[in-house]
Amino acid sequence: MDRDQEELQFIGFGGIIKEACRIIYIWRKMFTKITLSFILPLTIIFLAYPQLDEILSRKIVKHEDAKQWIIYVSFTIAYLMLVLFLLLLSTSVVVYTIACIYTTKQFTFRKVLSVVPKIWRRFMTTFAYQFLIMLAYNFMALLVLIPVFVIMLAYDLITLDVFIPVLKWMDEHKLYVLIICVFGYSIGFVYMNVIWNLANVVSVLEDFYGFGAIENSKALIKGKLVVVVALFVLIYLPMALSQIVFNIIVHIESFGIASKVCCGTICFVLTLVLILHGLVIQTIVYFVCKSYHGETIDKSRLANHLEVFLPEYEPPRGRSIELVQSNV
Image 1 (cartoon, rainbow, N blue to C red):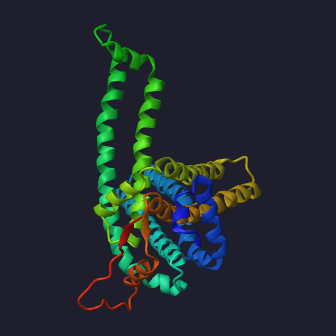
Image 2: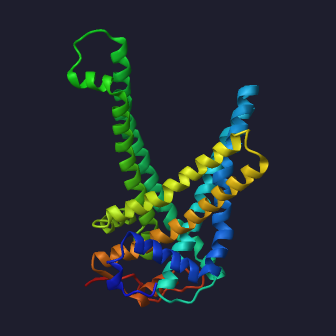
Image 3: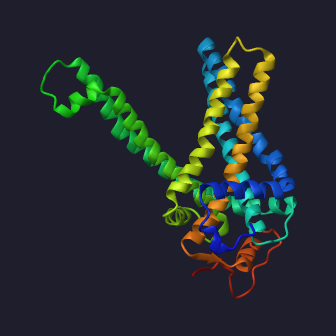
């Protein structure tokens, strides 16, 4: 990232993607190691889980044994924990790497790995807060959506003509009501995930983590929300579609082995590339948003802040090193 900080604020949707591709290409050896170590296993787990889940589900239906349920629940918990571990690990390594590139700080793959234990605590705190927020959001969504669907179903069973016009309209336009509900939920879901992604970067590059990182990321995306959301959709929508297509291909009996291997490989590579680019893009978005709000980051101070995560770091006596933000 050899651009001046003042130039970053003018980078838009295409510019961020181009910058991400450029960084990955220039530092391809480093990102290849990161991909093979963390993103590759994460991709394999993403694509393999639905198949393993289906096998275990069939065993439960066939045997109806409590032991099978225990195995299934244990498998699901292990999957979620492993995905969380690899995802946060990949994020921390990529964010730290991009920050080192930005500050022209010397680094190696082994050195980047050594900072993970300290960064991990920050990520877990931020994740815990975001998880509780998402849990509350989904609970509130259920409180709204369940009554809506119950009313629409009840309207068909009740012949009284005392229902208000709004309920009658809902009954006659069930598809539109469903689309409105799904669209409304999706907006909130995407917004909170965008906040979460940026909060992960804040947790590494600033002194904030947990709820403080979430609040700071909310402030950062103001004015760049449309661009950030568009980037999120560009990365995660094709990723979701790739997983769906992969699962469909596996179950199509008319497809030969060669066709399944070919299509499966395409879906696998696409998911792998999207995960890597998504992690790099969210870090670049952080610097773009900081520049957009007129906040500059002293590279030497940021470099000192990154030193704190190294195992051999010893804090100076009588003072603490902080990442200072100055307004232009």
